[in-house]
Length: 376
Image (cartoon, rainbow, N blue to C red; front, side, top):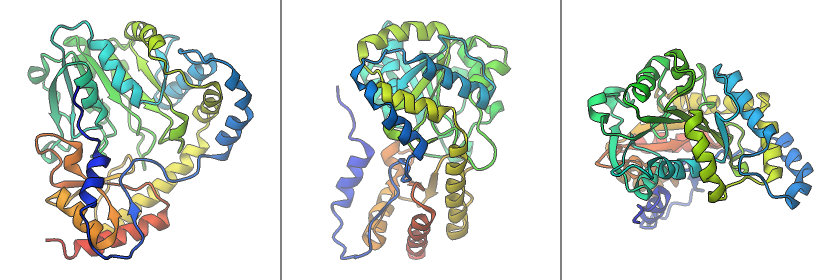
C-alpha cells in the first residue's frame, strides 16, 4: 500500500527550506489540537480510576460509557438510540480508517466517495480498502458544501461527509443533510458523517445526519451512520473517546470485526470519558474561548469566520507559497490547503487553526495581518 505523507510532514519539509533570520517566537496554528488544559474534573476522574488498569477492557466498552454517549445524542440532537445503535471507539481516527475496510470487504469493486479537501484518513481508508474514489469537491461556488447528485454518486458503496467541515469550517444545515439521508435509503449506499466538530460553534448548534434521517422517517437509521469524539469538545484528545452510531444492522457486524482489531479503551480512560460526555458546562466554556478567537479573526483580519469549528479557510491565491513566506517573515505556521486536497483543490487557501489562548491568537493574527499588507 502507498500512502501520501501526512500534511504536517509536508509542511515541515517545506519550512525546512526557510533561511530567514527572523527572531520572532514561532506560533503554530496548524494542528487541530486544543492548546488548553483538559478540565480538572476529567483529570481527577482519570486519576481516581487508575487502579482499573489491572483489568482488560471490553471491546464493546462499558455499559456506562455507551449509555453516556447515547444520552449525549438524545440531549444534543434529539436522536434516540437503542442498545446496539452505538459503539464506543478509540477516538474517531481508527474507526474512520477501519470501518470502510470492514464495510467494503465483500464488495468486488468498491467505490468510496468523500469530500475534497478532506481529513487524510478518508483517503487512507480508501487505499486500504482498494476502493475507487469519487471526490465530492468543496468549491467556493457551492458554498464549500458537497453536492448530492445521485447520477455522480450512483456507483458509490460508501460516502463520507464531514459537517462541520475540516478544513473549510462550513456547516450543512438540516435541509442540506436531508438529500444525503434520502440518498442512503433510495440508492442503498452507506452514508457516514464525521461530526467530531459538532460541539464547536458560536451560535447555532450544527445538526447531525441522524437528525436528518429521523426527519425523513428513517427512524432505524438504515444505511446512515455518524461518528463523534470527545477530543475537541472536552479539550481531551488523549482520552481517545469516540463513537460510531446509527444503523444497528451495520454496527452488529462491525462490532464483531472490532473484537479482532484490538482497539478497546483502557477502563480508567472510559471512566473519565463518561464524566466528560455527561457534562456540558465545560463544553460551554470551551465554546466561549473559541468564540473569542473567531471574534479576533473578524476584528484583525476583517473576515467573516464560519459559525463552527476553530478553523479559518483563508484565500491567499497560493497556499504553499503563502505558508512558506509567512513563516519566513513572521514565524507563524499555517497549513497549505493543497496538502488537504487532491486535483488542485485547496491550492488557493490556507487552513488556520485557532486553538491557542486568545492572547496568543491575537498575536498570531496580528502578524498575519501585517504580512498580508505586503503579500502580492
